[in-house]
Length: 173
Ligand SMILES: CC(C)(COP(=O)(O)OP(=O)(O)OC[C@H]1O[C@@H](n2cnc3c(N)ncnc32)[C@H](O)[C@@H]1OP(=O)(O)O)[C@@H](O)C(=O)NCCC(=O)NCCS
Image (cartoon, rainbow, N blue to C red; front, side):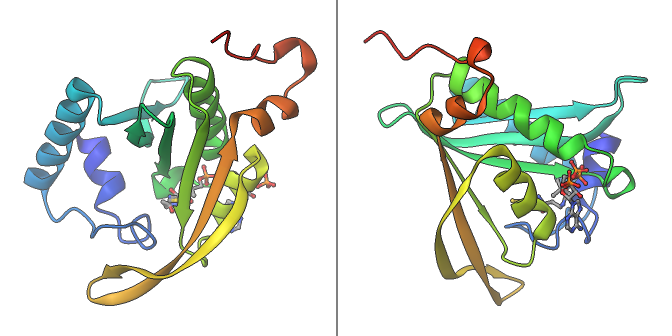
C-alpha cells in the first residue's frame, strides 16, 4: 500500500496521467479497492511490478477496457520515479503484452500517451506499437486540455517480432 501511494501521489509520475495525483492514503486504499473490484468482475487487470531482490513494488501495469467480443484491451503502466531508467518499464510492458496475446488471446492492444511523454511512447514503439492517430484535447487535467497520441499493436505484428520458435500458433477456431 505505501508503495502504491508513493507512486501514484507523485506529481512527476502523474504529469501525463489521465487523473490527478492521489491526495492521501485514503485515496490509495480506494484505488486498491478499485483494483480488487476490477479483477473480480474482469473489467480491470492491474499487476504490481516488483524488484527481484526484495519483492518491493516499484510500479504497475494495467489492462483495462477488456472487450471480449473484439478481443482488445487498453494497456497502461507506471514506474515510481526513484526507479526510472532501470528497464522496469520496458520489461513489464513486454511481459504484459505477451500475457495479453498468449493468455488472454487478445487480437489487439491499444494505448494512448501524452505527445510529450517521450519515455512512454519510446517503450510502446520498442514493443512494436504503431501510432494510429492524434486525439486533440482528449483529456481535461486540472481543467487544462491535453492531447493524446493513440497507438495500437496487433497480435500478428507482435508475433512476427518474436523469434520463430517462440511464436504463438494462430487460434484454431
Ligand atoms: C514511462 C515510464 C513507465 C518509463 O519507465 P522506465 O522504467 O523509466 O523505462 P525504462 O527504463 O524501461 O526505459 C525504456 C526506454 O525509454 C527510454 N526513456 C526512459 N525515460 C525517458 C525519458 N524521460 N525520455 C526519453 N526516453 C526515455 C529509455 O532510454 C529506454 O529506451 P532505450 O532502451 O532505447 O534506452 C516512467 O517514466 C513512468 O512511470 N512515467 C510516468 C507514468 C507514465 O507516463 N506512464 C505511461 C502512460 S501511457
